[in-house]
Amino acid sequence: MNKNFTKLQVPIDKDDLAGLKKRAQSLGFDSVQAYIRVWAKAVKEGRQLNFGVDDWGEPSDEAAARLNRWAEEAERDHKAGKLETFATVEEFMKDLRA
Image (cartoon, helix red, strand yellow):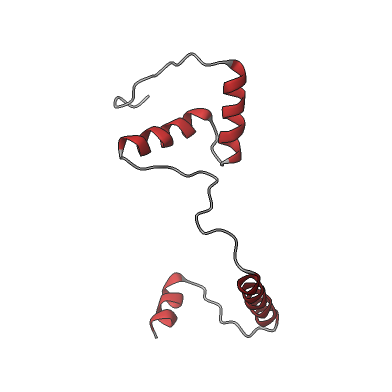
């Protein structure tokens, strides 16, 4: 263990721990400990975490249709070989800056 770490033991109800494990996994954490570390660091830094909260909301029907149309066009152009491909990041950046 890193010398800057300390161990925290917290008595917790088994059902609460099981629910916390399930929630942590649903958020992509590999353990309850990882979830708690992220939460604790955010609290220390004065940040508020909003896991599962979508501040942007759902797109309007018009926006969703537009995004779907763009995705279909990109897929069609890709299959037709109309999209430029790059072998390296440098090639991509050169084209991007041109």
